[in-house]
Length: 219
Length: 289
Image 1 (cartoon, each protein chain N blue to C red):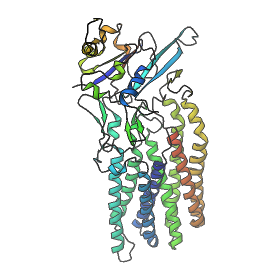
Image 2: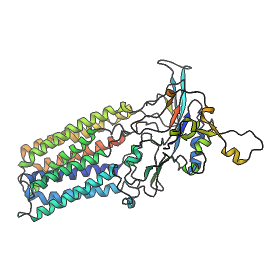
Image 3: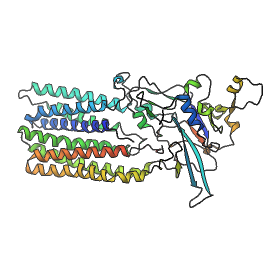
Protein backbone atom coordinates (compact mmCIF):
# COMPACT_ATOMS: atom_id res chain seq x y z
CA UNK A 1 0.00 0.00 0.00
CA UNK A 2 1.01 3.59 -0.53
CA UNK A 3 0.00 6.66 1.42
CA UNK A 4 1.56 9.79 0.04
CA UNK A 5 1.77 12.53 2.64
CA UNK A 6 3.66 15.60 3.76
CA UNK A 7 5.47 15.90 7.07
CA UNK A 8 6.21 19.43 8.25
CA UNK A 9 8.89 20.25 10.80
CA UNK A 10 7.20 23.07 12.71
CA UNK A 11 10.46 23.96 14.45
CA UNK A 12 11.84 24.87 11.03
CA UNK A 13 8.77 26.59 9.55
CA UNK A 14 9.24 30.37 9.60
CA UNK A 15 5.75 31.31 8.41
CA UNK A 16 6.93 32.81 5.13
CA UNK A 17 3.73 31.65 3.38
CA UNK A 18 5.78 30.52 0.37
CA UNK A 19 3.85 27.23 0.44
CA UNK A 20 0.54 29.08 0.23
CA UNK A 21 1.69 31.30 -2.62
CA UNK A 22 3.38 28.44 -4.49
CA UNK A 23 0.21 26.37 -4.23
CA UNK A 24 -1.91 29.19 -5.59
CA UNK A 25 0.45 29.71 -8.48
CA UNK A 26 0.88 26.04 -9.39
CA UNK A 27 -2.79 25.15 -9.15
CA UNK A 28 -4.51 28.41 -10.18
CA UNK A 29 -6.38 28.50 -6.88
CA UNK A 30 -9.14 31.13 -7.07
CA UNK A 31 -9.04 34.31 -4.99
CA UNK A 32 -10.47 33.61 -1.57
CA UNK A 33 -9.63 29.90 -1.65
CA UNK A 34 -6.55 28.43 0.02
CA UNK A 35 -5.64 24.84 -0.70
CA UNK A 36 -2.74 25.45 1.64
CA UNK A 37 -2.94 28.02 4.41
CA UNK A 38 -0.77 28.92 7.33
CA UNK A 39 -1.89 29.74 10.82
CA UNK A 40 0.26 31.35 13.48
CA UNK A 41 -0.30 29.50 16.74
CA UNK A 42 0.64 31.67 19.69
CA UNK A 43 2.33 33.38 21.32
CA UNK A 44 1.06 31.16 24.10
CA UNK A 45 2.52 30.96 27.64
CA UNK A 46 5.00 28.13 28.15
CA UNK A 47 3.42 27.34 31.46
CA UNK A 48 0.39 28.52 33.34
CA UNK A 49 0.73 32.17 34.27
CA UNK A 50 3.87 32.68 32.16
CA UNK A 51 4.42 36.10 30.58
CA UNK A 52 6.82 37.44 27.96
CA UNK A 53 9.50 36.21 27.27
CA UNK A 54 8.30 32.81 28.51
CA UNK A 55 6.05 32.31 25.50
CA UNK A 56 6.17 30.02 22.49
CA UNK A 57 4.87 30.22 18.96
CA UNK A 58 4.86 28.13 15.82
CA UNK A 59 3.38 28.29 12.34
CA UNK A 60 0.99 25.61 11.15
CA UNK A 61 0.52 25.00 7.41
CA UNK A 62 -2.82 23.27 6.82
CA UNK A 63 -4.31 21.75 3.72
CA UNK A 64 -6.14 18.55 2.86
CA UNK A 65 -4.68 15.90 5.13
CA UNK A 66 -5.39 13.09 2.61
CA UNK A 67 -6.90 11.12 5.46
CA UNK A 68 -6.75 7.35 5.72
CA UNK A 69 -10.50 7.23 6.37
CA UNK A 70 -11.76 10.40 4.68
CA UNK A 71 -15.25 11.48 5.67
CA UNK A 72 -15.43 13.63 2.54
CA UNK A 73 -15.28 10.47 0.43
CA UNK A 74 -17.90 8.71 2.55
CA UNK A 75 -20.48 11.49 2.20
CA UNK A 76 -19.98 12.20 -1.51
CA UNK A 77 -23.17 11.10 -3.31
CA UNK A 78 -21.61 10.62 -6.74
CA UNK A 79 -18.21 9.21 -5.92
CA UNK A 80 -16.58 12.39 -7.24
CA UNK A 81 -14.40 12.45 -4.12
CA UNK A 82 -12.40 9.27 -3.94
CA UNK A 83 -9.28 7.82 -2.47
CA UNK A 84 -6.71 6.68 -4.99
CA UNK A 85 -4.25 3.81 -4.72
CA UNK A 86 -1.47 6.24 -3.86
CA UNK A 87 -3.44 7.21 -0.75
CA UNK A 88 -4.38 10.69 -1.95
CA UNK A 89 -7.94 11.97 -1.91
CA UNK A 90 -8.92 13.42 -5.29
CA UNK A 91 -12.01 15.03 -6.79
CA UNK A 92 -13.37 14.11 -10.22
CA UNK A 93 -14.78 17.51 -11.12
CA UNK A 94 -16.94 16.10 -13.92
CA UNK A 95 -18.86 14.06 -11.35
CA UNK A 96 -19.16 16.75 -8.66
CA UNK A 97 -22.70 18.12 -8.29
CA UNK A 98 -21.58 20.88 -5.92
CA UNK A 99 -23.64 19.72 -2.96
CA UNK A 100 -20.74 20.69 -0.65
CA UNK A 101 -21.41 17.91 1.85
CA UNK A 102 -17.73 16.98 1.52
CA UNK A 103 -16.81 20.49 2.66
CA UNK A 104 -19.16 20.10 5.62
CA UNK A 105 -17.70 16.69 6.49
CA UNK A 106 -14.10 17.94 6.49
CA UNK A 107 -12.86 18.69 10.02
CA UNK A 108 -10.30 21.21 8.77
CA UNK A 109 -12.23 23.53 6.40
CA UNK A 110 -9.83 22.89 3.55
CA UNK A 111 -12.36 22.26 0.80
CA UNK A 112 -13.59 25.23 -1.21
CA UNK A 113 -16.41 25.75 -3.65
CA UNK A 114 -15.05 27.08 -6.92
CA UNK A 115 -17.96 29.39 -7.65
CA UNK A 116 -17.06 29.83 -11.28
CA UNK A 117 -17.01 26.11 -12.03
CA UNK A 118 -19.60 25.13 -9.41
CA UNK A 119 -17.48 22.31 -8.04
CA UNK A 120 -15.56 21.72 -4.83
CA UNK A 121 -11.77 21.85 -4.95
CA UNK A 122 -8.90 21.22 -2.59
CA UNK A 123 -5.24 20.23 -2.40
CA UNK A 124 -4.44 17.48 -4.90
CA UNK A 125 -0.98 16.95 -3.45
CA UNK A 126 0.07 18.29 -6.85
CA UNK A 127 -0.75 14.97 -8.51
CA UNK A 128 0.14 16.48 -11.88
CA UNK A 129 3.67 17.09 -10.63
CA UNK A 130 4.10 13.96 -8.51
CA UNK A 131 3.12 11.83 -11.51
CA UNK A 132 6.18 13.25 -13.28
CA UNK A 133 8.51 12.56 -10.39
CA UNK A 134 8.41 16.12 -9.09
CA UNK A 135 7.59 17.29 -5.59
CA UNK A 136 4.35 19.02 -4.58
CA UNK A 137 4.88 22.74 -5.16
CA UNK A 138 4.52 23.62 -1.46
CA UNK A 139 7.36 21.22 -0.69
CA UNK A 140 9.49 22.40 -3.58
CA UNK A 141 9.10 26.06 -2.63
CA UNK A 142 9.29 25.77 1.15
CA UNK A 143 11.53 28.63 2.25
CA UNK A 144 12.82 26.84 5.31
CA UNK A 145 12.99 23.32 3.90
CA UNK A 146 10.51 22.36 6.58
CA UNK A 147 8.20 20.29 4.38
CA UNK A 148 8.93 16.77 3.21
CA UNK A 149 7.01 14.58 0.77
CA UNK A 150 6.97 10.79 0.93
CA UNK A 151 5.07 7.60 1.52
CA UNK A 152 3.92 7.07 5.08
CA UNK A 153 3.67 3.34 4.56
CA UNK A 154 7.31 3.25 3.44
CA UNK A 155 8.40 5.05 6.60
CA UNK A 156 10.20 8.28 7.38
CA UNK A 157 13.11 7.19 5.16
CA UNK A 158 11.01 7.91 2.09
CA UNK A 159 10.36 11.57 2.93
CA UNK A 160 12.40 14.07 0.97
CA UNK A 161 12.73 17.78 0.25
CA UNK A 162 14.55 19.60 -2.55
CA UNK A 163 18.31 19.01 -2.27
CA UNK A 164 21.16 21.45 -2.53
CA UNK A 165 23.55 21.17 -5.46
CA UNK A 166 26.75 23.18 -5.01
CA UNK A 167 28.50 21.96 -8.14
CA UNK A 168 28.88 24.99 -10.42
CA UNK A 169 28.70 22.77 -13.49
CA UNK A 170 25.46 21.07 -12.45
CA UNK A 171 22.76 20.88 -15.11
CA UNK A 172 19.20 22.12 -14.65
CA UNK A 173 17.99 18.52 -14.36
CA UNK A 174 20.57 17.71 -11.69
CA UNK A 175 19.48 20.68 -9.60
CA UNK A 176 15.82 20.05 -10.29
CA UNK A 177 15.98 16.39 -9.36
CA UNK A 178 18.18 16.76 -6.30
CA UNK A 179 16.62 15.53 -3.06
CA UNK A 180 17.60 15.56 0.57
CA UNK A 181 16.14 12.93 2.92
CA UNK A 182 14.09 14.29 5.78
CA UNK A 183 16.09 12.36 8.35
CA UNK A 184 19.22 14.21 7.23
CA UNK A 185 17.58 17.60 7.02
CA UNK A 186 15.87 17.82 10.40
CA UNK A 187 17.08 17.56 13.94
CA UNK A 188 16.34 14.36 15.81
CA UNK A 189 12.79 13.84 16.96
CA UNK A 190 10.98 11.29 19.05
CA UNK A 191 7.81 9.50 18.08
CA UNK A 192 5.79 11.51 20.58
CA UNK A 193 6.98 14.68 18.86
CA UNK A 194 5.19 13.66 15.66
CA UNK A 195 1.62 14.92 15.88
CA UNK A 196 -1.47 15.22 13.69
CA UNK A 197 -4.42 17.58 13.50
CA UNK A 198 -7.50 16.72 15.62
CA UNK A 199 -8.65 13.27 14.58
CA UNK A 200 -12.39 12.63 14.66
CA UNK A 201 -12.17 9.22 13.06
CA UNK A 202 -10.81 10.43 9.71
CA UNK A 203 -7.19 9.51 10.57
CA UNK A 204 -5.28 12.35 8.90
CA UNK A 205 -2.19 11.25 7.00
CA UNK A 206 -0.21 14.48 7.17
CA UNK A 207 2.00 14.84 10.22
CA UNK A 208 3.87 17.60 12.01
CA UNK A 209 7.06 17.46 14.00
CA UNK A 210 7.12 19.75 17.03
CA UNK A 211 9.90 19.72 19.64
CA UNK A 212 10.19 21.66 22.90
CA UNK A 213 6.80 23.29 22.50
CA UNK A 214 3.29 22.31 23.44
CA UNK A 215 1.19 21.03 20.54
CA UNK A 216 -2.09 22.93 20.48
CA UNK A 217 -5.27 21.75 18.88
CA UNK A 218 -5.89 18.37 20.45
CA UNK A 219 -5.28 14.97 19.00
CA UNK B 1 -20.91 28.10 8.37
CA UNK B 2 -23.02 30.11 5.93
CA UNK B 3 -26.75 29.64 6.07
CA UNK B 4 -27.83 27.12 3.44
CA UNK B 5 -31.39 28.31 2.83
CA UNK B 6 -32.31 25.63 0.28
CA UNK B 7 -31.39 22.98 2.83
CA UNK B 8 -33.21 24.82 5.62
CA UNK B 9 -36.36 24.89 3.47
CA UNK B 10 -35.87 21.29 2.33
CA UNK B 11 -35.44 19.79 5.79
CA UNK B 12 -38.39 21.78 7.13
CA UNK B 13 -40.72 20.83 4.30
CA UNK B 14 -39.73 17.16 4.37
CA UNK B 15 -40.44 17.02 8.11
CA UNK B 16 -43.78 18.71 7.50
CA UNK B 17 -44.71 16.50 4.55
CA UNK B 18 -43.76 13.27 6.32
CA UNK B 19 -45.54 14.38 9.47
CA UNK B 20 -48.73 15.10 7.57
CA UNK B 21 -48.70 11.86 5.58
CA UNK B 22 -47.83 9.89 8.71
CA UNK B 23 -50.71 11.47 10.61
CA UNK B 24 -53.29 10.81 7.91
CA UNK B 25 -52.11 7.19 7.77
CA UNK B 26 -52.29 6.93 11.55
CA UNK B 27 -55.86 8.23 11.52
CA UNK B 28 -56.78 6.03 8.58
CA UNK B 29 -55.57 3.00 10.53
CA UNK B 30 -58.24 3.83 13.10
CA UNK B 31 -60.85 4.49 10.42
CA UNK B 32 -60.92 8.24 11.02
CA UNK B 33 -60.64 11.39 8.92
CA UNK B 34 -62.10 9.88 5.77
CA UNK B 35 -63.14 13.22 4.30
CA UNK B 36 -59.65 14.62 4.76
CA UNK B 37 -57.62 11.78 3.31
CA UNK B 38 -57.37 13.05 -0.26
CA UNK B 39 -56.67 16.71 0.56
CA UNK B 40 -54.10 15.67 3.17
CA UNK B 41 -52.42 13.37 0.66
CA UNK B 42 -52.29 16.16 -1.93
CA UNK B 43 -50.94 18.65 0.62
CA UNK B 44 -48.28 16.20 1.75
CA UNK B 45 -47.21 15.47 -1.82
CA UNK B 46 -47.09 19.19 -2.60
CA UNK B 47 -44.89 19.84 0.43
CA UNK B 48 -42.52 17.04 -0.55
CA UNK B 49 -42.37 18.33 -4.11
CA UNK B 50 -41.68 21.88 -2.90
CA UNK B 51 -38.90 20.53 -0.68
CA UNK B 52 -37.46 18.68 -3.65
CA UNK B 53 -37.45 21.83 -5.74
CA UNK B 54 -35.81 23.75 -2.90
CA UNK B 55 -32.96 21.28 -2.55
CA UNK B 56 -32.12 21.59 -6.22
CA UNK B 57 -31.26 25.24 -5.59
CA UNK B 58 -28.52 24.01 -3.30
CA UNK B 59 -26.85 21.94 -6.00
CA UNK B 60 -24.38 23.71 -8.27
CA UNK B 61 -24.69 21.02 -10.95
CA UNK B 62 -28.07 19.38 -10.52
CA UNK B 63 -27.92 18.20 -14.13
CA UNK B 64 -25.19 15.76 -13.05
CA UNK B 65 -27.30 14.23 -10.32
CA UNK B 66 -27.70 10.93 -12.12
CA UNK B 67 -24.12 10.94 -13.34
CA UNK B 68 -22.88 8.33 -10.92
CA UNK B 69 -25.37 9.17 -8.18
CA UNK B 70 -25.64 6.20 -5.88
CA UNK B 71 -22.73 6.13 -3.46
CA UNK B 72 -24.53 4.29 -0.69
CA UNK B 73 -22.53 5.63 2.27
CA UNK B 74 -23.59 9.16 1.33
CA UNK B 75 -26.41 10.67 3.35
CA UNK B 76 -27.74 12.36 0.21
CA UNK B 77 -28.00 9.03 -1.58
CA UNK B 78 -29.74 7.52 1.43
CA UNK B 79 -32.15 10.47 1.49
CA UNK B 80 -32.97 9.97 -2.19
CA UNK B 81 -33.62 6.26 -1.62
CA UNK B 82 -35.88 7.08 1.34
CA UNK B 83 -37.78 9.71 -0.68
CA UNK B 84 -38.31 7.27 -3.56
CA UNK B 85 -39.43 4.54 -1.13
CA UNK B 86 -41.85 6.93 0.57
CA UNK B 87 -43.17 8.09 -2.80
CA UNK B 88 -43.82 4.46 -3.77
CA UNK B 89 -45.70 3.89 -0.51
CA UNK B 90 -47.63 7.12 -1.03
CA UNK B 91 -48.68 6.07 -4.52
CA UNK B 92 -49.76 2.64 -3.23
CA UNK B 93 -51.65 4.43 -0.46
CA UNK B 94 -53.42 6.65 -2.99
CA UNK B 95 -54.31 3.70 -5.22
CA UNK B 96 -55.68 1.74 -2.24
CA UNK B 97 -57.63 4.77 -1.14
CA UNK B 98 -59.18 5.38 -4.56
CA UNK B 99 -60.03 1.71 -5.04
CA UNK B 100 -61.82 1.39 -1.70
CA UNK B 101 -65.60 1.50 -1.57
CA UNK B 102 -65.77 4.83 0.22
CA UNK B 103 -62.76 6.26 -1.59
CA UNK B 104 -60.92 6.93 1.66
CA UNK B 105 -60.09 3.60 3.29
CA UNK B 106 -56.66 2.04 3.27
CA UNK B 107 -55.60 -1.40 4.52
CA UNK B 108 -54.31 -1.13 8.06
CA UNK B 109 -50.98 -2.75 7.24
CA UNK B 110 -50.37 -0.12 4.54
CA UNK B 111 -51.18 2.64 7.01
CA UNK B 112 -48.54 1.40 9.39
CA UNK B 113 -46.03 0.97 6.57
CA UNK B 114 -46.69 4.60 5.64
CA UNK B 115 -46.17 5.75 9.23
CA UNK B 116 -42.90 3.81 9.45
CA UNK B 117 -41.65 5.14 6.11
CA UNK B 118 -42.43 8.72 7.15
CA UNK B 119 -40.40 8.29 10.32
CA UNK B 120 -37.60 6.60 8.38
CA UNK B 121 -37.40 9.40 5.81
CA UNK B 122 -37.12 12.11 8.45
CA UNK B 123 -34.55 10.11 10.43
CA UNK B 124 -32.45 9.39 7.33
CA UNK B 125 -32.64 13.03 6.24
CA UNK B 126 -31.49 14.27 9.65
CA UNK B 127 -28.85 11.56 9.93
CA UNK B 128 -27.10 12.83 6.81
CA UNK B 129 -26.08 15.93 8.77
CA UNK B 130 -24.56 14.14 11.74
CA UNK B 131 -20.86 14.51 11.11
CA UNK B 132 -17.99 14.15 13.55
CA UNK B 133 -16.36 17.12 11.83
CA UNK B 134 -19.16 19.42 13.05
CA UNK B 135 -19.54 18.89 16.82
CA UNK B 136 -22.78 20.88 17.01
CA UNK B 137 -24.39 18.57 14.47
CA UNK B 138 -23.07 15.27 15.69
CA UNK B 139 -25.91 14.12 17.92
CA UNK B 140 -28.87 11.77 17.80
CA UNK B 141 -30.79 14.62 19.45
CA UNK B 142 -30.82 16.37 16.08
CA UNK B 143 -32.51 13.33 14.53
CA UNK B 144 -35.04 13.26 17.35
CA UNK B 145 -35.60 16.99 16.92
CA UNK B 146 -36.39 16.58 13.21
CA UNK B 147 -38.81 13.77 14.10
CA UNK B 148 -40.29 16.12 16.70
CA UNK B 149 -40.90 18.68 13.95
CA UNK B 150 -42.95 16.09 12.09
CA UNK B 151 -44.83 15.14 15.24
CA UNK B 152 -46.01 18.73 15.75
CA UNK B 153 -46.47 19.88 12.15
CA UNK B 154 -48.24 16.75 10.90
CA UNK B 155 -51.09 16.34 13.40
CA UNK B 156 -51.75 20.08 13.71
CA UNK B 157 -51.95 20.49 9.92
CA UNK B 158 -54.17 17.43 9.73
CA UNK B 159 -56.42 18.91 12.41
CA UNK B 160 -56.88 22.08 10.36
CA UNK B 161 -57.69 20.08 7.22
CA UNK B 162 -60.12 17.86 9.14
CA UNK B 163 -62.04 20.81 10.49
CA UNK B 164 -62.12 22.47 7.09
CA UNK B 165 -63.43 19.26 5.53
CA UNK B 166 -66.01 18.73 8.26
CA UNK B 167 -64.48 15.55 9.71
CA UNK B 168 -64.80 14.68 13.36
CA UNK B 169 -61.71 16.35 14.87
CA UNK B 170 -61.77 14.47 18.17
CA UNK B 171 -59.45 11.63 17.03
CA UNK B 172 -56.70 14.08 16.06
CA UNK B 173 -56.64 15.92 19.39
CA UNK B 174 -54.51 13.38 21.23
CA UNK B 175 -51.96 12.86 18.41
CA UNK B 176 -51.66 16.65 18.10
CA UNK B 177 -51.10 17.10 21.81
CA UNK B 178 -48.63 14.23 22.10
CA UNK B 179 -46.87 15.34 18.92
CA UNK B 180 -46.52 18.92 20.14
CA UNK B 181 -45.24 17.66 23.49
CA UNK B 182 -42.62 15.48 21.75
CA UNK B 183 -41.64 18.44 19.58
CA UNK B 184 -41.24 20.68 22.61
CA UNK B 185 -39.22 18.10 24.54
CA UNK B 186 -36.89 17.37 21.63
CA UNK B 187 -36.47 21.11 20.98
CA UNK B 188 -35.38 21.65 24.58
CA UNK B 189 -33.03 18.67 24.48
CA UNK B 190 -31.34 19.64 21.21
CA UNK B 191 -31.17 23.31 22.20
CA UNK B 192 -29.35 22.28 25.38
CA UNK B 193 -26.95 20.19 23.29
CA UNK B 194 -26.28 23.10 20.94
CA UNK B 195 -25.77 25.40 23.90
CA UNK B 196 -23.18 23.01 25.31
CA UNK B 197 -21.43 22.52 21.96
CA UNK B 198 -19.15 25.52 22.54
CA UNK B 199 -16.76 23.32 24.50
CA UNK B 200 -16.42 20.69 21.76
CA UNK B 201 -14.01 22.50 19.46
CA UNK B 202 -10.23 22.28 19.32
CA UNK B 203 -8.43 25.07 21.22
CA UNK B 204 -5.07 26.50 20.20
CA UNK B 205 -4.80 29.46 22.55
CA UNK B 206 -3.83 32.70 20.80
CA UNK B 207 -3.53 32.51 17.05
CA UNK B 208 -3.44 34.67 13.96
CA UNK B 209 -4.39 34.01 10.35
CA UNK B 210 -1.96 35.91 8.10
CA UNK B 211 -4.24 35.52 5.08
CA UNK B 212 -7.03 37.34 6.94
CA UNK B 213 -5.14 39.87 9.04
CA UNK B 214 -8.22 41.81 10.08
CA UNK B 215 -10.27 38.79 11.17
CA UNK B 216 -10.73 38.26 14.87
CA UNK B 217 -10.07 34.98 16.59
CA UNK B 218 -12.92 32.49 16.34
CA UNK B 219 -14.57 32.09 19.70
CA UNK B 220 -17.04 29.23 19.84
CA UNK B 221 -18.34 30.15 23.29
CA UNK B 222 -19.15 33.71 22.21
CA UNK B 223 -20.81 32.47 19.03
CA UNK B 224 -22.96 30.04 20.97
CA UNK B 225 -23.93 32.79 23.39
CA UNK B 226 -24.89 35.08 20.50
CA UNK B 227 -27.30 32.45 19.15
CA UNK B 228 -29.01 31.89 22.51
CA UNK B 229 -31.95 34.29 21.87
CA UNK B 230 -32.80 32.67 18.54
CA UNK B 231 -32.31 29.22 20.01
CA UNK B 232 -34.30 29.58 23.21
CA UNK B 233 -36.69 32.32 22.13
CA UNK B 234 -37.32 31.21 18.55
CA UNK B 235 -36.80 27.46 18.49
CA UNK B 236 -37.89 26.52 22.01
CA UNK B 237 -40.41 29.15 23.16
CA UNK B 238 -42.06 29.92 19.81
CA UNK B 239 -41.35 26.60 18.12
CA UNK B 240 -41.87 24.30 21.11
CA UNK B 241 -43.98 25.86 23.86
CA UNK B 242 -46.50 27.80 21.73
CA UNK B 243 -47.51 24.86 19.51
CA UNK B 244 -47.94 22.77 22.66
CA UNK B 245 -50.18 25.42 24.20
CA UNK B 246 -52.11 25.81 20.94
CA UNK B 247 -52.59 22.05 20.64
CA UNK B 248 -53.82 21.92 24.21
CA UNK B 249 -56.35 24.71 23.66
CA UNK B 250 -57.31 23.34 20.24
CA UNK B 251 -57.98 19.92 21.71
CA UNK B 252 -60.08 21.28 24.56
CA UNK B 253 -62.09 23.71 22.45
CA UNK B 254 -62.35 21.44 19.42
CA UNK B 255 -61.70 24.50 17.30
CA UNK B 256 -58.65 23.70 15.17
CA UNK B 257 -58.90 26.24 12.38
CA UNK B 258 -57.30 28.97 14.42
CA UNK B 259 -55.41 26.97 17.04
CA UNK B 260 -54.11 24.38 14.61
CA UNK B 261 -52.98 27.07 12.19
CA UNK B 262 -51.28 28.92 15.05
CA UNK B 263 -49.51 25.75 16.14
CA UNK B 264 -48.32 25.06 12.60
CA UNK B 265 -47.15 28.64 12.08
CA UNK B 266 -45.24 28.66 15.38
CA UNK B 267 -43.73 25.22 14.73
CA UNK B 268 -42.53 26.39 11.32
CA UNK B 269 -40.98 29.54 12.78
CA UNK B 270 -39.28 27.44 15.44
CA UNK B 271 -38.04 24.91 12.90
CA UNK B 272 -36.48 27.65 10.77
CA UNK B 273 -34.97 29.40 13.82
CA UNK B 274 -33.31 26.21 14.99
CA UNK B 275 -31.96 25.43 11.54
CA UNK B 276 -30.46 28.93 11.35
CA UNK B 277 -28.72 28.31 14.68
CA UNK B 278 -27.76 24.85 13.42
CA UNK B 279 -25.82 26.37 10.54
CA UNK B 280 -24.43 29.29 12.55
CA UNK B 281 -22.96 26.83 15.06
CA UNK B 282 -21.98 24.30 12.43
CA UNK B 283 -18.28 25.07 12.77
CA UNK B 284 -15.69 22.47 11.96
CA UNK B 285 -13.89 20.91 14.90
CA UNK B 286 -10.72 22.77 13.82
CA UNK B 287 -12.50 26.07 13.32
CA UNK B 288 -9.73 28.61 12.92
CA UNK B 289 -10.04 29.48 9.24
